[in-house]
View 1 (cartoon, rainbow, N blue to C red):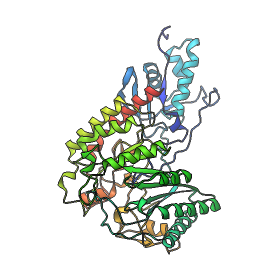
View 2 (view 1 turned 180 degrees about the horizontal axis):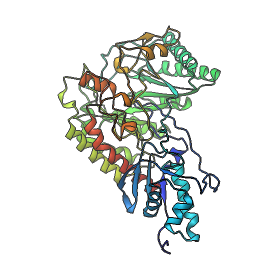
View 3 (view 1 turned 90 degrees about the vertical axis):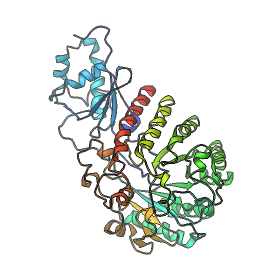
View 4 (view 1 turned 120 degrees about the vertical axis):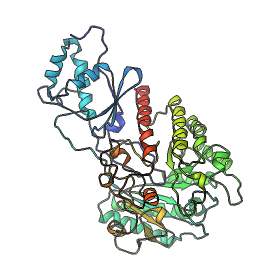
Length: 496
C-alpha cells in the first residue's frame, strides 16, 4: 500500500513546448525556426481510458536534482521531463504494456491518492513518455517556413578574423531588392509555404538600412496580399546602430541580432576595425541602447579557440541583462584559415563551454536554452537536418544571384529572374549537400541524432571532403549534450 505520507507522483515538463511554442534563437546566422504540432492536455478523465494498454517510450535516464530522475527522448513530445521517485515507480509499471487500472492495482494505491496518480498518468501520456501504441513515429518538427538571406551590402565597417566575405563597397540597389522579395514570395506560393522569414544581412546591414526598411515594407505588402505570415531580423555587428534605426525596427516588428564574442579584449581580438581598433565598447553601448528602447537583441556568440576561455565572463554579462543568446562554433573558411588560434581545439572548447555552463547554472534564465547552447544542435525539438540549406532556404546576394548557403555566396546556383528559385536550389547536386541525419555515417545509431543532426555540412565537408558523415566536432557535441539536458532539468525544476 502507498505510505500515508509518501510524496505524490510528480511529472515536470516544459508546458510551452508541448503547446507548440518551440524556443529558438532565430536571429543567429544559420538558425532556422522549427514548428511542432501542439498537444492539448485535458484536465478531465476522458482522454485516459483506464482499460487501454499503455507502452513506455524509450528514454535515456540520468540521476537528476532534488531526488528527481531526468528523462530525455526524441520519441517523446516533451523531449525532457523530470520524474520524482513516485512518478518513476509509476512509469516503470509499464515496462510491459499495461492498462492504468492494472498498474495502479499493482502499486496498491489508496483511494484518496488515486487523483494524484491519475494526474501523473495524464502528464506522462501528454508528454509522450507513455503512449497508447508501440513504435510511435518520432514527432519530427516541421520545416514550414521559407527562409531568405538578403545580402543587402558587401560593405562592412569591421574586419572580423573569421569572416568568410571579401569586403567591397558594393550595395544592393532597390530594384534588385524588390525583385528579390518578389522571387521569395513566388517560391513561397509555388511551394505552399505559409510563413516567410527574411534575414537582412551583409556585410553590415545597417550600412544600407534605408533599403532594409523599404524592402521589409514591400515584403509586408506582399505578405498581406498573399495571406502569408512574415517575420524579419536584422543581422548586425552592432557598431553603427542609432536610436532612429531601433525605432524603425520596432515599428516594423523587426528583430535584431548583434554579434558579441567576449568582454573587452576577448571580443576585440576577433571583431575589430580595419586599423585593429576594437569594437567592444561601441557594441555593448548600442546593445544597452536597443534594450532601453524596448528592442531586446539576440546575442550571437562565435566560439573559437581564441575566445573560448572568455566565455564564462561573457555569459555572466549576458545573463545579468536577461538577453537571449546562442553559442555558435567557428567555421573555418578560405579567408580565415591562416588564423591557427581560431581552430576548435577540443579540450579548449569543451573546457570553455563547461565553464560557461556553470555560470548558467548559477543564473538560470526563465527561457529554455535547448536551442541555443551547442552550435547548430537544437534539443528543443527532434528534426532531421541541421539547417535549411538546400531545402527551404534562399541566399540572395547584392546582384540578385541565389546560393544555397551564405558561406557559398560566391558559388550561386541560380538567380532571382527564374520562376521558382527554390526549386532550382532543391534540385542542385553540386553545391553544399544537406543530408538527413539518417544518411550520415557515424550518426545513424547515435542517441542524439535527431537533436544534433550531424552538425554543419559546410564544416564537415571542409574537414573531411564528405557531406554524408558525422561532424568533426562530434566528440565536443557528445560531451556537452548531457550537460545541456541537465541545465534544462534544473531550469524546469526552478520554474515549476
